[in-house]
Length: 334
Ligand code: PMV
Image (cartoon, rainbow, N blue to C red; front, side):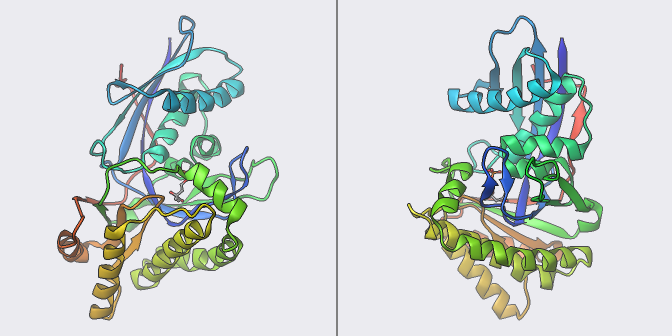
């Protein structure tokens, strides 16, 4: 029996990944930058390979996963099997710490944990950098979840994708004052997943090339602000990049609208709070969905939470600190 268990946390990008230059190899158009969340947004995954299994099986939170989810995992494991030169099928057991049905994306933590557990079970002993090269095939953002703290995913230059890996910019210990206040505003799964959505944008959005040009400048400002821990420099760039990605989404055909009226109310409230205080108390960012992530400093998190609580449509608030990269466990799920 070949078995291993890995734990990985989700990450929320401040410079977003939206669009590939090569879909098959999942090579992005631009570098992206994220913070890895603490254990509140975590996936634990056990992978078991055995000669007796005739097909891959997937269980999520003790329930048999849908055929769509199973196929996505099985396609990913095919890449790992090829690397290991092994044909064995698997049973995969996965558990999320997220509040169930909170509408929080779990693909980043899920595929980072799956990459770690499956390769370890097959005796591949890869470094985190090597794992990040594999994880992106499951979900681009998963490449960043191998590391804790602030993480950059390099788009790379090579055609074969061998330089398209992630690396840590700053460990979580240097980010102990940073918080992500998550406002859950919708619990449903998104209609168009990110992989499909970004492909539509690459094919149809005229704004996307302009966004990609702007990313590099924002990325440098953001990295500098993180290294020097300057929230006043970081906050405007976070909001600009989220706005820019959502403009590209809307500019696509069909138009991709992921934000809802509550998301817009949150954007306006954060802008108002910042302008009233004449400094940045919070910086909003949204992935391919309406739930808000407000980066803030711990001294201001109470105020951000009290503002969010007053907004019509906000269903739940989760406060996250910055967290760790992948780790392995001997306590297997089965
Ligand atoms: O990891 P994917 O393939 O689901 O794409 C993630 C895209 C965004 O969440 C919208 C942005 C990002 O960089 O995480």
